[in-house]
Image 1: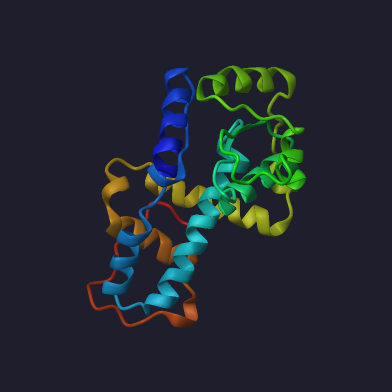
Image 2: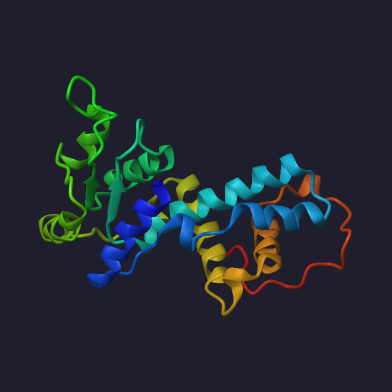
Length: 212
C-alpha cells in the first residue's frame, strides 16, 4: 500500500513535468544485488552491511545533489524512518519540502509530532491533487539553494562522492537490470578490503565508475 501510494505521488509529479527520483523504483533492488554478492563468496551479513552503505550513499547523494525539492509522505502509524532522515537533510540544506498526509494514525492529541511537521513549518497537504500546487508554491517561496559539496562536513562529502559514482554506473545503458555490474560497483566502492573473499567466479570486470 505504501509503495503504491508513493508511486501515485511520483506519477502525479511526473505528469506535471517534474523529474522524480523514487528510491524503491529508481534505486537498486537490494535482494537481487545481495544474491550476486553472496554468489561471489561474500558472507551474507558482510554483503548486506556494505550494500546498505551503498543505498545510504545513493539516497544521500540524491537528496543533496540531484533533487531540487522533497515531497515527503507522512502517512503511516509512524512515518518511514528513511524519509524522516531525508527530510531532515533537505531541511538542514534549506531545500523546499512538501509534506503529504491523509492518515490520522500518527496524530498525538490531534497533532503530528512537532519535530516532524516543524520541518515543513507545520503545514501539510491532505489531498494528492494538492501536492503539485503546493510544490510550485514552495519553489517560489523558497528557491532551491546552490549546494557546494566541498563545503559540507567530510562524511557528507564522502557519501555524495560515493553516491555519485554509483549513480553514474546506474545511469549506463542497461545497467538498471544488470545486477552483476551493480555488484561490481558496490564492491569497489563500499566493500571492506579486510573481508575480501577469494572469488568463486572470474575476476569482476573493470568499472567505468570509480571513487573520484
